[in-house]
Every structure is written in C-alpha cells, then in structure tokens.
Length: 634
Image 1 (cartoon, helix red, strand yellow):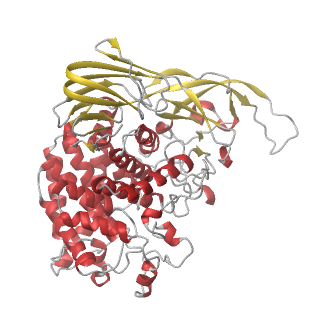
Image 2 (tube, rainbow, N blue to C red; image 1 turned 180 degrees about the vertical axis):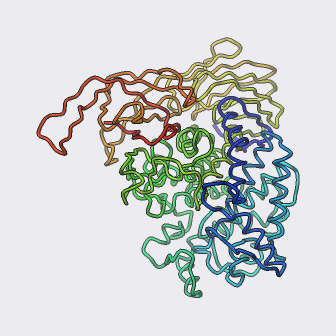
Image 3 (cartoon, rainbow, N blue to C red; image 1 turned 60 degrees about the vertical axis):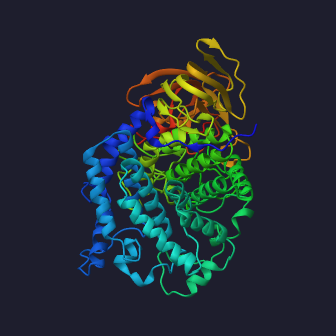
C-alpha cells in the first residue's frame, strides 16, 4: 500500500493525560525549575554549570566591558541552556505558566545580548578567543551548539509566538550560510546535530538557506577524508587533544565516506543518530531515495545487530560509541541516555518516510526503558550511562566499570542528558501522533486529546504501559491508523462495542471514521521471556523478562544477591501487586537460588533451592538505594 508521507502533529494539538501527563507534570513542576537553578548556579551540592553566566560574560565582551569570571565549562556548555529553553517551551504548551514564560524571556534576552553583530553566537569563542572562530570544526562543537539553539528557537516560537530567539537564530543561520556557502569555506560539523535543526527551521519558516545549508553539510560530509586533517594542520591549538590522523577518527565522526555509501552505524552513538535523523528528515522533504536507502541500511544495522534489549545504543565507554555487531556487554554497557533520545528522533523521521510499525516499536522500546531510566522517579537525579547489570563494589569503582554508576548523580559537568530527557518528555505528543491529508496516526499509545488538521478529534484513555486496554473516542471524518506493537502477538479490536476484524498491515490497523466512534484495543498483557542471541558473547544462554513495552530487571533489594538467582524457564511469570513506591506493577517468576559459600572456588556442586524472584520495570531501577541489578539472568 502506497502511503502519503506523514508529519508530526504540532505539540499544541496534543494534551496528554495518564502516564505521560504524570511525567510531563514532573518535568514542569520539578525538573525544569531544578535545571534552571543549576544553569544559574543556584542549586546546592551540584556540579557548577555557569552556563547562563557564560552568556552574560559574552555580552560584556561584545560591549567592551570586563567579562568578569570569564568562560567556564565544556566547549558546548551553551547547549545546556538551549535544551532547557526547548523543554521549558514545550512545557508552556502543556502547562501555561506566566512565571516560567517570563523566566524564558529573561534568559533569551541575555542570549540575544551575546550575539555578535555579524550573527555569530557562541560564548566559548566570544569570551575566550574570537579569532579562533570556525577554525576547529573537528572538536569545537560550534555547529552542534548552533543546532540546539535553533531547535530551542523553533520550540519557543511555537509555544509563545514570540520571535526574539527565532530571529536571533535566523541571523545566526545567515552568518553560517555566509561562511560556508557564500564565502565557500570548507567544513562539516565535527558533531552532527545542526542538520536536523536546520530541517526544523526550514519547515517552520520556509527559510531556503536553512534547507540549502542542511543539503550542503550532508552532501559534503565524507567527500574529502582529509578535511579535518587539513584543518588541524592550519592551527596550533586543540580542545580535546584529539588527532584527526588517528586510526578510526574519521569513522568515529561518521565522515570517512559519503553518507549515501554508509553501511553500518559507527562511531560516537549520539552523533550518529543525530546525523541519521537529519539524513532521514532531508530525504523525506526532498524525496532523496538514495539518502533514504542509506538510512534504512543504518537502521537495520542498529536494531538488528547493535542495540540493547532496553533500546540503548553505544556499547563502549571508549568514545561513547558503537563497536561491532553483537558486542553488547551488560555490565560495561554505555547506552547513553542521549543516544536513545536520538534513536527516537531517527525512528520518528523514518516513520515520516514509511509507515512501518518497527519504527514505532523502537520508539517505545527506547522511551519506556532507557530514556525513562535516565531520570529518577522524583526527577532530581539522572543517569548518563544505562547499564544492564550493576554490582556494588565493582560498578562505579573498578576502572573497567567506573562509568556504570549504581546511583544517579544530581547533575554532571557534561550535562547533555538531563535536559534532553526533559525536552523529549514534554514534546512526547510529536512522536506519539502524526498525520497526513487523509489519515491520523497513533504511533505510540498515549492517553490524551489530539486535534488533527483534517478536523478529526481523538481522545485516548488508558493506563498504558501498565494496562494494555486502550479506549479511543474519535469524531470527524477520515482514516485512523493505530499502531499494534510487535510484541503483542494477539490483540482484540472493537468498534462501537462490536468485534472488528482488523488486519495488521506493517504494524498498523486502519479504521474508517465518519462521525463519532468508540474504539477499544486490547493488547496482550502476558509477561514473557526474551532470549539472547547466541552471537552475543556475554549473555548467550541468558534470559530477560518483558511485559508490554517494559523490560524488567531484578534488584538485590527484592531478591538478595541476584547473582545467585536462576530463572526457571519452564515457568510462567505473573503480575504481582502494584508498587506505590515505584508506581508500577512488579512481576513474580518461579526460580531457584544458589546457596552462598565463603569459598572463592569449590569442587562441590552448587545447592539450588526453590525461590520466587521479583522483577521491576527497568526504568524504575536504582530508586531505592544502592543495590545489585540485572536484566539478563542465568
């Protein structure tokens, strides 16, 4: 079936309720105010940010004043402010708040004062050394920061209708266009991100230079493998002391070959999926089938060979990167929260090109597991890294496991993940629902009310992902496409109380609507085991537990030493009581437990006794103190 390409709905068209609304309220009430305090350096006992102070000091430099305490933080520190603005702007769409809107106006006013007359905007270079602008694209993240600021400007305009930041970033885009297009200076982003941001700006404003810049960066990438080497030969300074001549550096930065010839996902995982999102966005807008074919190859390689069962990607701490097919160790996993956010971006852009349930499946898998696990249930602590196994005394301590923390920190000096989670949660409706001229799409099950451009109005009531009953009240005229997740082998659909023989096509069922209809979808709520491929060395022969979109894990606080637990694979897991502390159902599974011994090694056969093990949703782990945790079990 040939489908017209669908687009994301406006966030204003979706008002959430239920599980997603709970999280959006948490972000609005707790996370956004907390992150704002951190950006102003007003939060106690946290890593210093200085991000807003950097903008204030940059403004002083441009006015010829003393910059005070100068610049502090990472070279991309500005992006922390950009992502906070984006999250706060989406929050205003969900929860109007005049105080927050005034705070946004204040911060945006400070940012505008830090923009140079020629449109350049980056506090690192404005405060530290203006003469070095655009001379270290390999390391210095100038285009990455610009991308996040463009995204923030688009969101703020959508939320408030105010053009202050939008016009600021249009001037910045014109400056970038002049440097790379009009003047013909060579270069591509060392850290991709601006590509997808330029597509957002183009779709919002019709700015042709934004589309041309995106096309330029995508088409030039990998064309000249010596690009960054030549750049480095012309300067005598560095940010990270990285050498573009090092073996694998070009592959690490996804610029070792033209994008249309890419076969496998390589290098820094966040950069990769941000880049692939921009590629898929560009393909959707321009009809570039060759670019889309490359996206499909990259997609297949990630989800079939290089993705954790939790939707995490990027398996090594060395460069926060993809490694090789089937290299997915649970205890040293990196699986950066930002990488799963980026994977959702990539999946949503692939859905714009082709309506296939596999893309929606991965959006859910990444969101309900890795992304939500990246933030504590109270919204005050965050994981940068998301391991699938934690052993106190080893995890977070020994050199090979130092990155896999057993307890979420409050903040990070490199704080890309916390605001990334916030902006994704607040903009969830953009990914859950879509539309084209004649069809409204429900990609992810999300309670709330949606108003589509074709006049259809949908109200969804559900306790998903904890309940698998989904009720839609729909009015209007058109076709409704509802995603049935791939994990739900069986499902039932009724329309106005009558059984509806719905055929699942590419992961969706289609229902014609004319007037008002009541639709109920019942998905399979049976907990089931997931088995690892024998090609994955560390977990071959092991077992994991899933119910709906949720992957479960076993914590020591419920089970003692989870290393001693052996799952009875012939048993049937069952839903246990609802945990008010975790806000989720736990699962019980018949198991065996190995008797502990003081001997390091013994010739005695282990003694196993019957045991009933308790599993909790992976996204809830680490919220009850430091304890063992495992997803994959013996």
